[in-house]
Length: 284
Image 1: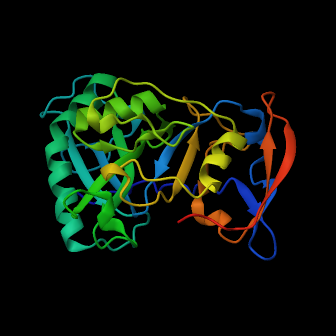
Image 2: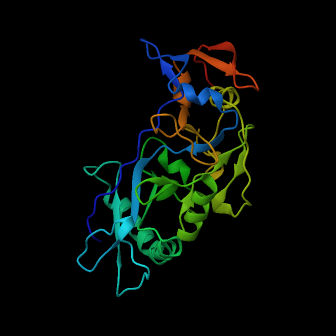
Image 3: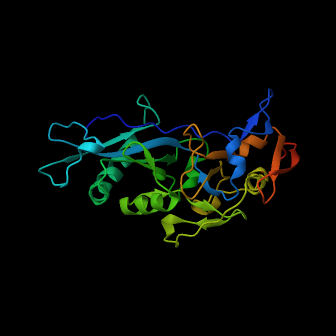
């Protein structure tokens, strides 16, 4: 594997700001989120951030820029470098997890090269979580065999273009990778990519998804719900951005409500309707 720079994953902010006592408030961190009524929710896996990076190089191992990509993606013209990393270049990965990731990357490499060639792109970076036994508290409960694994949640191409949710799913399936599942507002699964479900999603507004997480009853969609979910990540079907170019995504964690706090509920028109107060008492 060739060592090449990989774009790090941008931090996903929590939906609500906190006050001086670190309690959830009714103020959105990203005001633009208030104007979107239809949000999807994927499960937020409690693990360690991982990047699997596939990109074209020339015969000297130098990265090929998008504008320099060849017309013919043959071995005579290009090679494909595979890189594995954590959230940052300095991140240290457990040896057994790294071995699993190497196996997954090797198995995915032929399909990754096909995708690069098919769409005329020069890099494909898959972001996900390394998760399972020994990774965060109760990590073993995510997986039936109590082992470690990798589950994808985002894909970036050419170091600049984020794929939409359906394309992320299709890419993960082609690469033979697990993909984080989607919630229904009931707390059940709306879409389980790893189990061959047809692509179908459930939408909700900010208040509805906050109600689901703050109830304290949300279970993981993995391994039959053996553990409580860490939370959800709110996404749009296709990527949307604010005026500064920041992608409109947010996370809501169960622990956000353990200390109590106030959050806003939202009507069908996206406007704030009322404030609801939680005292932090959760059934966990």
